[in-house]
Image 1 (cartoon, one colour):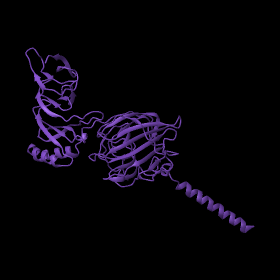
Image 2 (image 1 turned 180 degrees about the horizontal axis):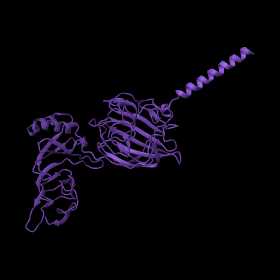
Image 3 (image 1 turned 180 degrees about the vertical axis):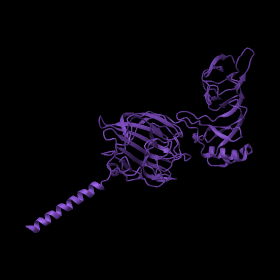
Length: 443
């Protein structure tokens, strides 16, 4: 009996020691989560993890958002409130460059890795395939809502979208947001391309810039395959210290980014000056596909310094290569990008513009530039009269003659055109907001 009593006493003492140790060295509640910046499978500090999306079917979205831009953003109303990193949203901004952003709208094309922390300027980010994608001529950004309340799924699909400068070599992938669970699914239908295949130039993962959190699956690695997927389930017990009750959409205002031929043009001019333009022109003619070019120097803003206006024209089968670029000089002469506008049209002929004439068409004592595509009948005026620099279309398509008319008694020059969709000879003038037909002249 004494022996048994001693054994019980010892066991009781050991039990008290174990309880005391657990009490003294117990982990804080936040320790069940991972670090602020995590690599899949996670978890990160909020509790997001990452795994394969087995059993999730690819859904072909059919509602075209109409975003036909390179480095563009479109705002999408969510069909249901969606919670991401502890904050509930009712809208999301979709980038042409393969990502979604909450309370943010940055179309920046140059992806970066999340492993060193959330990227400044990208906000609360869902990145299924953040890469330099181009929607100007090929591909669609589409949405779809499937299911019924409270089990709906919101689908955002990048359908047949090429990387910048790679023509018809495209990728197709989608994000699915789930109503009841707030789960996130990435699905990849076709990511096998001739160049940078399977995510070699893409960032895939999640981040919350406001909370300082990120969960990266891959960065510039061939980590995804056709007909594969990733699941980021909303944590069963998320970190209560993360998230805010409400948020507002605060779009970021960023200037145009010089890349590709535009980047080469800007860098070369700042190194060698305008004398390099002739050599660049020969280079563009000899590249494949070929690009024709012409330029002019005009003071578009009235500051006494000349802007460089450059037009590119590509082959008819490559409408995305038709482009208008404006470079503006600083006091020290260094050029910066002011405007980079693709002229691509999805459902009609794409203008191949040429410079026609420079004069003050708007009465603001600053030169404007008249441009024309005589083959397709498009005419535009490049002007700052409406406040910002803009390429404003003239009404009607006219494939006949084009000339300027200044008469005594006219406060502004008239643009006179023949061969228009409206029969006869038309005179066009600036009305303070836009260019309008003011009179039909007798031929």
